[in-house]
Length: 221
Image (cartoon, rainbow, N blue to C red; front, side):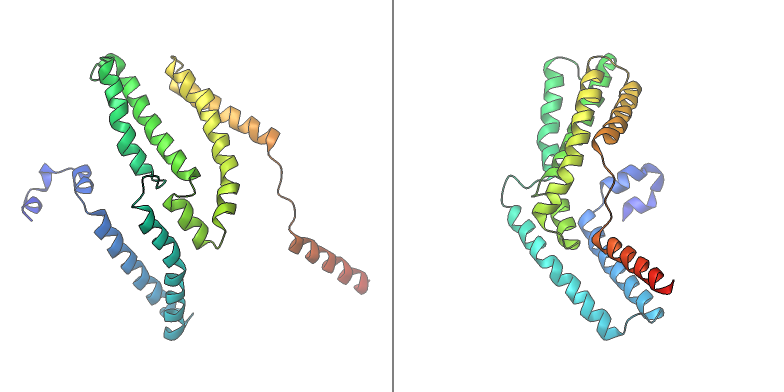
């Protein structure tokens, strides 16, 4: 605890960089559970037996995705964005070093662009992968099938990825100002959404409700 005696020597970035994220998440999960239990009991929404019952049901619903993730950690293709970052970031830096661009202030924009491309590509691939922990947990927690969840989110991810590559990454790499690339991407997405998108149709429940209201109005008249 000697660091606490000299707080001025350590920035907030150093504190977060040297923190234990696993321990923080464990304590955060435990405290959030206790807070939810206290709020439920204070508002008399559930009894203690009911709260414990639903808590165990929630834990049980997460056992399958957690087991799958634990088994996936023994494989290479885990759908992990952090894994891609760890693999690709040294390669991107090596390319800059090979061409003598690393550390040169005149070419720092290429360094920033390379880092941004690796981060964006890793997150994009993680979002599309059916093996990613975020995709798996989102599907299981919402009660949606994994295949259906991936199938519904792929068109949106591909749409944004293609536009970002064609109108953002490639033009900016050839010298287009970054702010102009962002503006062009935003305009292309707005136009693409207007051309390809369509309004959500009314659900059958809404149609049934409308018919019921109409019949009730006819009877009343």
